[in-house]
Length: 113
Image 1: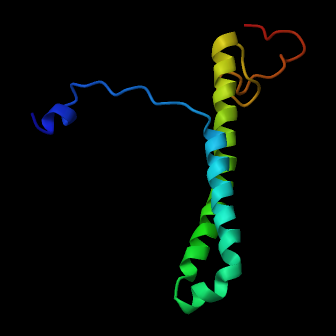
Image 2: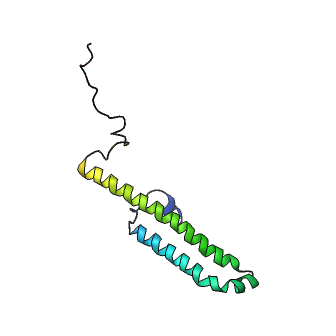
């Protein structure tokens, strides 16, 4: 009974949990920006006590949260497109692997062999 029980590779990894990732990231971003705005009126106190990094940490969290929102929204859209392709078996449009290079058929008679 040691670490080998957990690290031997005999146990199968569980499936990842999928929740509402967009709402989670939006909520976290709102919290970071709220913390920044709540601390902003006390900038003088933070400056006197050499704690202005608290303010800038909250601002950085909010800005990174904006990037996170953009990222997870794109991820959700890609997952939705993939699910649709899998369910319908249809091509998702130009630029995908199965649709790349496919264009209209050439006009005119077929080449003679």
